[in-house]
Image (tube, rainbow, N blue to C red; front, side, top):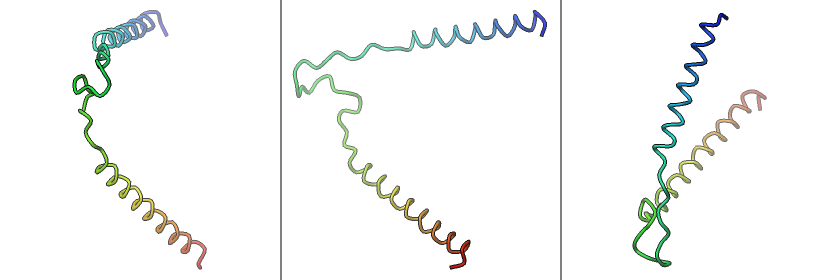
Amino acid sequence: MNLKTNLKSCLLSLILLGFIAFSITTVAQAPPPPPVEKGSATNKAPGGGAPIDGGLYGALVLVACFGAWKWVHGVQREKQVTGR
């Protein structure tokens, strides 16, 4: 490699690192202040304490069904390979 190509790649790397460093420092936000007292209605986390139980149960059912489906197809494939 000649000096000109090496200098261009080094300059490009420095510019890229500069953009990354600038974006990290400008986008960062301070954490919210702590609650005034326990159980306070103010200053809650984002989402406001939305329940996740319905979605969680649905996701668990889908994961269990997918696992069962993969297991059944694996058993069927094993039977085809071994000839049993």
